[in-house]
Image (cartoon, rainbow, N blue to C red):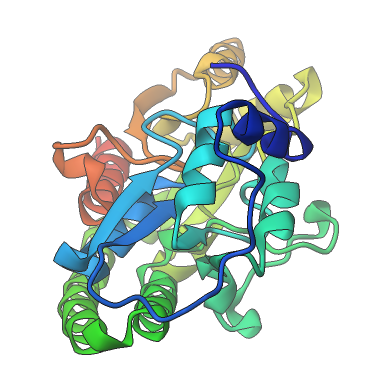
Length: 310
């Protein structure tokens, strides 16, 4: 699908006979289905769970899509223009869409759900140049703030259904409390000295902090940065010295770099396994357990624990 920059959107809409973009009057929504557009699957899933039958959710980025590198297509821009509410991750997760979000703020309701997490709980690695790590969904307790932000945004725009949104959110938050306990129980199965998680990019730091894992990623927090030969050698040296039993690929990142790490470790006389594929910046296929946030998190922790215990 062809890519299109925001300044070209008006021309596209005029050519399609839709006229120029008009600023929306952000009136309360009553009766009609609330049209929601979400950027990533985790956000879309939460919006669907909280919104229930009152919302129609479209998610821009499907399975295997890397939000760090994603550029809005012409079709995406049309979906955003039609939306009543836009939910996105924020914290520079969708870096190449920042200009789009800036331009539509005020024309329709936009909420950066991860920015609802109190700043004292956010990670700001030095290598990320003063910005925060956006992968907050890997700490289930932090992700509950995002769910609450979605609830509050829906209730404000659609006050007649506020009670429904609060009930749906309460049920979902209870499910997330149980999920958090499940992840903690699974993590405790791994001896402390073996709780080392090595993946393709640095997406799991919140997971590591919350559940007691040392985390190493080959690439940086954003996959826009590429790992070099020195990064591969340094990580291979660490794995061989610590005799880490397994490393993990990610569904939205090419496995090439992790395979290079494995070969470099072998050259040092130690054979590290690929313990499985984790979902990092994208969920699994719709209709599968991994196509939901809860199922994705369960899959990840089960895969990590099984890989490190073998």
